Amino acid sequence: MKKQFQSGILLFLGNDECGCNYEDNTYFYRQDSSFLYYFGISKPNLAAIIDIDENKEYIFGDEATIDLIVWTGSQPSIQELADRVGVKYTAGLSRLTEKLRKADKEQIHYLPPYRAEHILKLNHLLRYSKEEISAKFSKKFIEAIANQRNIKSEEEIVEIEKAVTVTSEMHKRAMNFALPGMTEAQVAAVVHETALAAGGNLSFPIIATINGQFLHNHYHGNTIKEGQLFLLDAGYETPLGYAGDMSSTFPVSEKFTERQKEIYQITLEAHNNAIKMAKPNVNFKDVHLHVCETIFDGLKALGFTKGNTQEAVANGAHALFFPCGTGHLMGLDVHDMENLGEVIVGYNNVPKSSQFGLKSLRLGRPLEPGFVITIEPGIYFIPELIDHWRANKINADFINFDKVDKYRDFGGIRNEEDLLITKTGNRILGKPLAKTIEDVEAERKVAFRK
Figure (cartoon, helix red, strand yellow):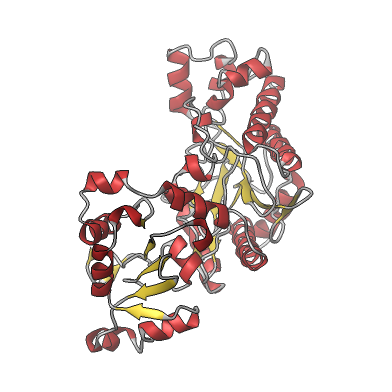
């Protein structure tokens, strides 16, 4: 990192704890990922700098008071924490303020804030207004971090593989457990239990729903019934902070209906086509567009869509059924470095599309060995979206709305796996997830035989 800069100070703000409904009842704590990557300490109320001119690294934090120790137990000193990660210099947080205020502010590189506390800290440390804070973050700093964090080391790959393997077990538990008459919350509970029992936690809030047509649906209050589809999107985060992210869709019944099989098979074909295409130097946007064509063609064979496939995809007609992206980067963040900006990290400074559907693609750059990505095509029947497109004649030349309307209660289907891009292609990480119709139904038999 230091070789990327001629002079100046690189500022890393750690995350603080945050009260949920009062100060001492805090949300689950998660350290800032870039702080973790470079300084490796998961503890609230820390900051760090790399001083290029001094060629020194510092960790700043205040020592635990006796009042805190009474409640939390013995705490290592800031210097002991620094020694564990090979940082020589430490000081209290007040010294950070002194050091930064003596420096040339234009030479202080910081990342775009994504938490209110970061804005307040930068306001205090640099005496910038909120508007200045949003304008003066360092693009060069973001690019330097992205170029390093995007390429996963061997140690990181091992850790991510652990995360993905536990994630696969979380999905298997759900498939082997869910039965008609249960609530979505009961299924989500065994998924969360599996993560906690493995020693880590969730990498994002669980999506466990019979309303899989809504992409990020975190409501768990429905009772699941025969004939419905259940969509689970859940991931494990290791104690070191690395994420897994997988999705699975299975019937609440023991087997899929014929109608469900037809749609499921299209998503599976799109999924497998994406994996075949994901190689070094292939732009992930091209992978996504190929997935869109596969979905459109599959639906055309069933009478949902019509017309020239390439023209339809160019016009975004597929987005009625697939209004999101085929995948994203993954690592210390489940959507890796999304806080640093998708255009820089995910698109390598190439502007994103503003077209509905395509604008939600989080990764649109050539793949490189060492990238870890998700593959997650899906097909979703969203009644409100169907009605909106039909009323406004959006892509009417490519959509058979009478046929689509008959599936407005279908729900949604998504499968998701995590891939490492290698020098010659890719490798699916972790324990395999049941994804063929036959494998999913085999897992469902376990639930019904209990």
